[in-house]
Amino acid sequence: MKKKSTIWISIVLVLLVVFFLKVGFSKSPEKDNKKDLKDKKQKKVDGYIVKPSLLINEISVSGSLLAFEEVDLKNEVAGRVVMINLPEGKAVKKGTLLVKLFDEDLQATLKKLKAQLAIQQQIYNRQTELIRVNGITQNDYDQTGLQLNSLKADIEVEKTLIRKTEVRAPFDGVIGLRSVSVGAIITPATLLATIRTENKIKLDFSVPQKYGSVIRTGMKIKFNTSNVDKQYEAVVIATEQGIDASTRNLKVRALVSSQSKELLPGSFSNVTVRLSENKNALVVPTQAIVPSETNKSVIVARDGKAHFIPVMTGVRQDSNIEITQGIQPGDTIITSGILFLKEGSKLRYSTITK
Image (cartoon, rainbow, N blue to C red):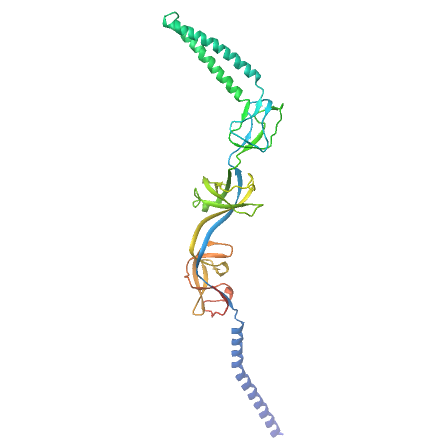
């Protein structure tokens, strides 16, 4: 009985030894397999080879088209309209009589003054002969001259009042829609029509304060209207010379050099302002930037390993960003999988963009 127990104990011991030996020998290959599996699971990354390229720094803002000259036609005095010459949509020359008010009472007063002036002129001429021979006193002669000049001044005043009953074109332009008819009683607040220059169009727009120093007279800009994709050109002619305190923008005015029927005063426009141009800029995809609390970095591939390099950035575009300091032409920048990389990580590429 005792012999059988010893046999069974020996068998159990042998089995335990075999089990532990098997586990011991299998641990090392398992670790190697896990390591190989980890290497296989390592994500592949995309690379981008940096090279100098053309970078155009431009901004897009909204603007409005305006007539170069535009005036609401109104009269200086109240009165009744007796004549209208407002050809809607037609061009008129500067000085053309457009609206005439009733002025017969003023004309009658003018005729009366002219008649008085003629008589007074004759008296003055006679007294001029008499003063030479001491036929009248100097005081009488001076009084006659004063009355003559007073009548001339009254006539000028009356002519001015008559001119105020006339509305004339202030410049060469096109008449808009008229708002009055013959016989209407108007006041200085009554809008008669509008007049605008025909061929000249100006463009008003605003740029953020930080770009104010870049805008200069003579700068060329491009724009398009909301209903036409065609690009038009304009030249900056002036700025407001001061930043708007409420919007922190600088107002700019440009003269449109293009001519088209689509360019109508009051139209909305999309303005593109080219601020600068760099032919040797180092530009990388924006997703390559690794932001942190203190700086920005990119991952540069060197000797097949990842290295985090601090950089300074410049102009940002929709999908690219300029690097002004930190990298050199020919460096390979990692653009994908950057969240899984650490300093010194080995790199496996999916694609490399040149």
